[in-house]
Image (cartoon, rainbow, N blue to C red; front, side, top):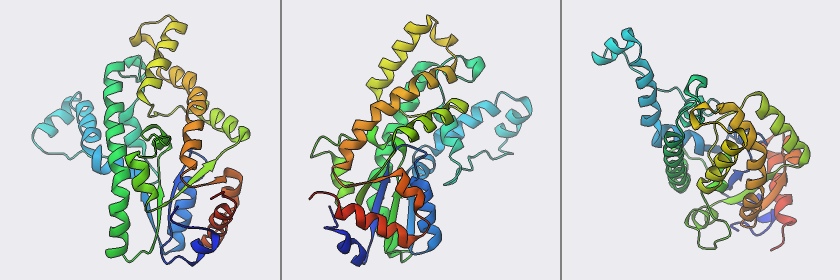
Amino acid sequence: MIYRNGADFRAAREKRVLLFGMSGLGKTHLSNLLRDAGGWFHYSVDYRIGTRYMGEYIADNFKREAMKVPLLRELLMTDSVYIASNITFDNLAPLSTYLGKPGNPAQGGVPFAEYCTRQAQHREAEIAALHDTLRFIDRARDIYGYSNFVCDSGGSICEVVDATDPADPVMTALSSQLLMVWIKGGEAHRDALIRRFDKAPKPIYYQPDFLATLWAEYLAQEGKPEDQVDPDAFLRFGYARLLAHRQPRYAAMAKWGVTVTAEEVAMVKDAAQFDDLIAKALDTTPA
């Protein structure tokens, strides 16, 4: 790790951390807190994916829908209107909407083959955005004068790396420049995430083999053709399995850094308390 202990982190002229864990446990909360406190550059992997790497896919999807409306079609064909996503750190809906959900088109689903294509696009984009982290560390320092840097990673980071491989290119690159910090949730957090997801299922990136298995199991259980699957019902079916699938992958990543709990993160109110949290984690992590 780039910091030997808590004192080393506190004394560092440049504090650089990457936060990872399931969505909803505090990654963006901490990142926003640090950015708003001043002195910290906030790099959002999901924002980078949605703007730099998938922006054209997203805009083209909007245009396909607009072309179905005669008035908008005429305006688009004459370059009279401009269509683009308004993605922000706090509103990633354009990216989620494009990623979509597989199943019945009448219920907002997309064909499974198209869904897999978009999943593959997301995987490629996420890996590229993670590699961009190192360049943004330099940009934050050289252009804006930020010495401290927080990378707000997506919940699917564990799906695009193999943390059990000491030579994994993404993990080795990131850990060489940032402290990897796992925000770990307990059973209560798991149950709360499931309840929240049940109310409003959101598009997710899956590791390809896991997705293929999950889809086959659901089709067998429901006995429906692909184009009759309720997209939200499928996402609900797989969410608890996804949490279980990701937990050991996050744990493997944590061996490259430190672990803090979601309860501890919820108690952080300012940058000084964040420093305390990371210093404590460093001092209690075996070398």
